[in-house]
Image (cartoon, rainbow, N blue to C red):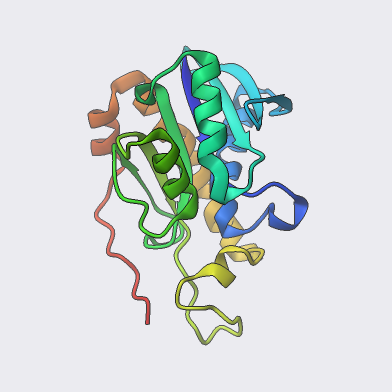
Amino acid sequence: MKLIVGLGNPGPEYALTPHNAGFLAVDRIAAVCNVQIANRRGRALTARTKLAGHDVLLAKPETFMNLSGLSVAALLDELHLGVEDLIVLHDELDFPLGTLRIAQRGSANGHNGVKSVSGVLGTDEWLRVRIGVGKPPLDDGRKVKAGGADYLLTPMRRQELATLDEVLDQAVRAVEAVLTKGVSAAMNEFNRKVEPESRQ
């Protein structure tokens, strides 16, 4: 079995914010599998299903982003799984909206959810699908702090949601590729050279 976790914040006010791209991606996987993520276990909403012929548990932590690692660790322990069985989907400010990359390890890069998962698990050697949410230009009418916190917790506009919608389908295919072809082949297929966005 694989544990597939989307990172995000619970509550309707956060539902369509960039920081909830991980939740939205796991919701998309659930829709493809025709299941509802509604069971409570390991401090998360979960759904057990099959994806690409593999048994998986889909999970959306209810701990809020900064404490995501507590839920991930609880689920791994309950399911008797190791970090090699974990796939995490999360938003990534440094990649443009509409892109994604698969990574086998890496620093948190300022992402508090990633920091929490690595901190609780005691390692950053776990697979993640990083979903680009970019950052709008500073002159688009919204106040965006240098760190991106305002942007990440502000509901996305219609055009942004339309762009994200396409990458959510890519995220499903990326996870399927990891399960069926292995990590290296999936990375070769989905990772494209992405220049980090300027943080002027």
